[in-house]
Amino acid sequence: MKVLLDTHAFLWLLSGDHRLSEKARKTFLNSGNELFFSAASLWEMCIKISLGKISMKKGWYEAVQSEMEANAIQWLPIDMPHCERLAKLPFHHRDPFDRMLIAQAIVEDMQLLSRDTCLSAYDIHRVW
Image (cartoon, one colour):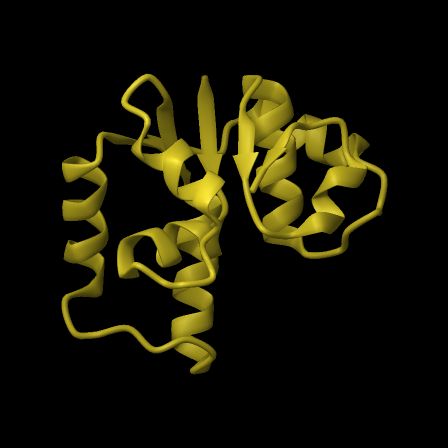
């Protein structure tokens, strides 16, 4: 199955955070799954770093790239069909980054690995 990683899930997976569910960890480790990291998530990380909302060690960008390569996580750019689908989403959730992940998951027929239960209000399969 194709799995899109929510920003927090990606960070928790890489850091071994205890908040990661066992099902999420197994989904990540299942070599039969195709894993994806969205440009929206990197954008969110960059904004939160610049605002001081999250702290990352020096070399974090290279570490993200290295972890993506080591774990066969594919890059998912934001494409025009994602934006078109985003415009049609109901406002069950207002976070712009999560909304883009939802639109991408719908367009690309992916499951979304996320702890955020609000995302289940959309026509996606949320894994946690």
